Image (cartoon, rainbow, N blue to C red):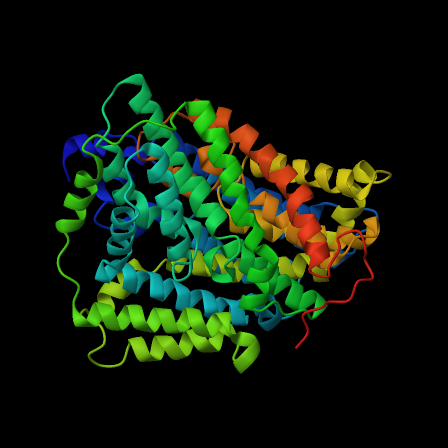
Length: 516
């Protein structure tokens, strides 16, 4: 590796080396950085274990909490410090969580502590990660992105943003996690913004394109696809385990598709802030066509993979007809993809591009989320939050909780980590406010995903920042308003839509209308 690359800032190094391997860009947060970052990681590592042992064995049981709840609180403190300081890779933290739950006596047996690793949603997520890796290894992700940009006849910065949102949505059908989509689209986006010059208007266009395409577009496009956003699966798994309510792929889409409209509002705001609407692409469509023309021709194997992915999407969308769970459909498709002669590359290429660490994080997060609910810790935390938000109308109470979660989110990088802690508390809060448990939990958890104040709050933001197109000040100034847009949109659009679909957030007694 060249010395100038070694001396570059961490995010810049990630950008330079990851255009050929976008998955690596998705995991830039997995290894503690050198210098001050290493000192921070070491301090966080020591503080996490100190907090764990102090709460588990030295601190008396708080009033209103039982011994199991206090033990779970010790694990929550450990993992929160580890996640905030990036003391160890997030995947390793997920693997260690069952051990900590047993060691602290939060769970009586390892099988119970590790229950998240056997959850159906984990197998669905694993299959989706492998699908994503196959797309990257075959180059289908880049091919789809450039084909859409070319066919949509993009000519301006505004057109690029809308076209990239379409790309994000199409990729969300088969590429799980916003960070994976952002990483896959990073080289495409960098190629497009490199066409612009350095005039003030063109620099503004770059900022708008990168923030909207890699962060806002990646997050919003994944809200209505169950497998496209890891917090979706955390919430779905929690509701199934705690309430016995299973949300199918199709039901999730019916409930969540109005979130796509939020992109229209963020687009208007970002264009207004950066004054980027009518800025033309230097070179116009010819530049994009040139990038597309440089790709090798699609092979028969590539078309076979696309057909299988289309079949998976169709089976997921028609689950109410055939009643095959999403994870079973995904695993059947995986078996077909790995049949001899289907792929033109080997397992090694797939394995290298699979985000195993995020899978372990998800499984560990599901285990911890279940413990937070089962131990009574969620109810205890909900009692304290209730005193702040009670006495108001349902909309104001939800708004207070939403704003509170965004304060908590400022120090956390992972959406999965944040939802792991917030979703069980929201579920426990619902009966205290007299609100529908599913609608309330989903509203709070969904809004929490739009953490746009700092790039470090979500991995997609870190990936976008690696492009060098904007500063943290740019991101924060436009992001504060975008967070408020998300809160208002949830209250004024999504909550009424939930009511129309049969789960009004203000009616705790409403029966689940989607039972098969």
